[in-house]
Image (cartoon, rainbow, N blue to C red; front, top):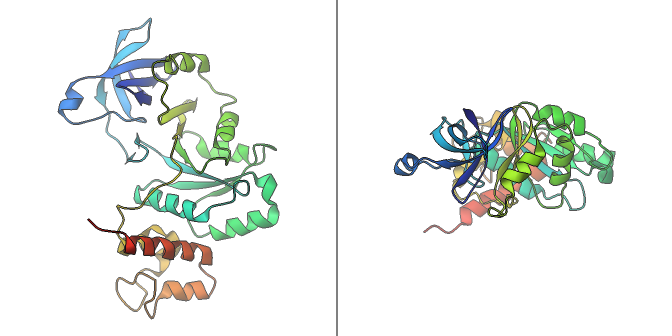
Length: 292
């Protein structure tokens, strides 16, 4: 049978088989010999060892479309980056870091600004304008009033979506709302995943309905961009893309070079100043990082 790994901890992997349930599996020893490790999100084939106790063995890991290192999760269709308009205060630099990370991993990002009822229309318009050139869909939601939740549900349909964002922005509340019509036995998930021996929280897939999953990633609230060189950072800002190759100097990094079309676009209001300032801060951070 084929299913998805929804959680892995202490050598046990919990595989969701649609219309069958959750099976607790061990991985075959051959994976260790081949230096392959199953990841949350992997599509796998399993053999059933005990149908009554829902126990099995992972026999094959299907090819991955992509994978993230931190958190370790595979086959993600998109990222939902959740921030609050207020309480906590919106951290635009953290969002820029997330956007760069997802662009590097070639995972499309969607922006969800929760607690819209605290921000007001003027603030929503301001934030929407900042990210208009990012290439990301921008949604505003409120778990208190239900605003925007229906549109978010449509955005997630049929996809595996990793959720990320700082603490206190309402990720758990959104997840609970989106699971209202869950089509699997949540009691069975609880029994399989909360037996007591596996209590450490790790990344896991939350089945919302058939072929629709949310990836819960505890601790995925900050990140470092060590794997990116400063000269390549510009390629992860979609606002700059249309000006690439038009600057006076080849390989222009859009910082202080004369004849830079990105900086000209900034002066003309075609690129948002806060996005450019985020770029400069990230660029200087990469420039000044210690090399060993």
